[in-house]
Figure 1 (cartoon, rainbow over the protein chains, first blue to last red):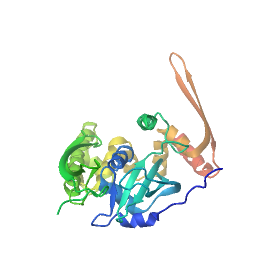
Figure 2 (figure 1 turned 90 degrees about the vertical axis):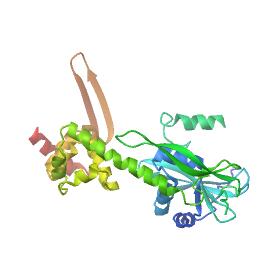
Figure 3 (figure 1 turned 120 degrees about the horizontal axis):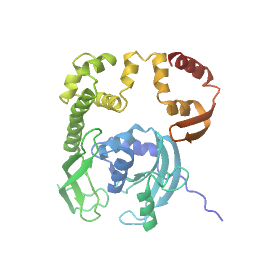
Figure 4 (figure 1 turned 180 degrees about the vertical axis):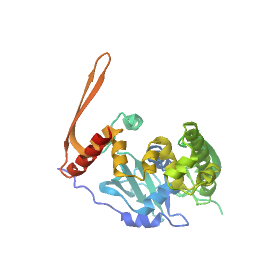
Length: 132
Length: 191
């Protein structure tokens, strides 16, 4: 039996609306910041949130919805999407904490599938996945 | 009031200095040391309360603006004077003098970087982007032109001691046919 794919848990538009808010309501994990800078030239958290606040996601598709495995938000659902920025695809995952804050969990090229860049372009991502 | 980690709610948060490298086109990388928050519980780092972005953004902007002067010097060394650049791009004269002093907008810096990457675009601009000059420009970048206008490309190479040859065959899409015919006519007239 094949499990039915889970539909998104959050409204993406709610995240987009929260991005420009001060005091901050959206926080980007360090690893997501590093990959957003390295692969997409979004060099600071402010640039990432500024980009997301535009709400323009080309060819966006819901990729998966799952639950976090680690504390303190263990069991919280996250949504992951794939969309395009120019010629590049982005795997983008986020969730909302119980206190209402949003967390950007991932922002990197897709690791697998037809939208993933060729291995020759991202050997270290592949090595990182292989180590897990 | 202590800062709380937005990822794990810990109060074990400290302010630290970190050094980051930022790539600046046509200039040395900018190595910037700036303050950030670090959570000792979950090891996340970042601007947890929105107070620390300003100094980093100013440092990045200053590093980018400083690169304008280098680009202008490089273009001058290649024989492209700023007077020619201003004339070709229809900019007010003395604009680049302001750029050189670091008074340059994001869009102007992007334009300058594009010109530094593809100086021959100045010739196109200087001719007011006429169709003929654009066609000639495309002739000097044949693969870009062919890739844009054809599908199912097939490329073969020939090589001997004295000659190298490239044969490119592709199907012209019906929507491109009239414009390609026109551009090929201009190209054949010019060459």
